[in-house]
View 1 (tube, rainbow, N blue to C red):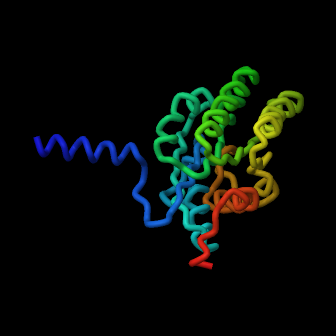
View 2: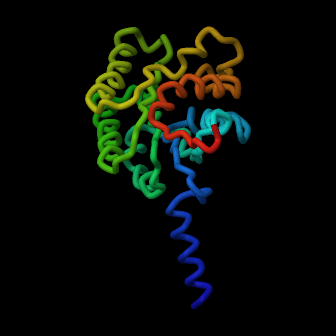
View 3: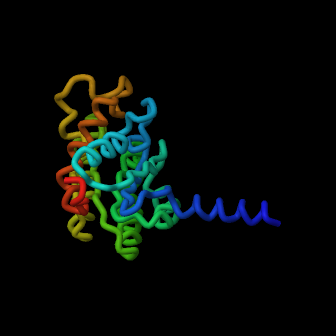
Length: 210
């Protein structure tokens, strides 16, 4: 009986999220392969880079990587509950790229992201919406409509917003993997820096570490 009880308690603790130091807050990076660090070694994803940046600047946050390669906005809706169980203070939402690459209806992408943002807001969680673009071969009209999905949702929800997380990678060598889609370790560092100015406005500074 004692063994069963211990197993149940351990399982519930796992559901509750990562162990935290006293006074530490949770920041969840919720997204697809860009967040997950597809093609990279451990410690090279943008959430890893963000953790290092925040530690250096005296922000007492535990950055949790909840990225899943291949995830669509539909998957984001289906997987939101475990994120809520972590009781994060801030969530970076980075989804939509796989919807666009698969040519899924933009109305569907918009509805799914809208539901994710609404769910986080209802839980009183601060959100940073991270936008992404598509390869040029998808056509300028579709790419513009795709980008507008993120802009419209950011305006509707009055959320912090970075329209294009790759904006500082475009003309920088060695920041994109050979597949032409995913960031390298260097690219991940740049993405973290690109997100940081908007993110800092959502964070609480640990004055004891200034």
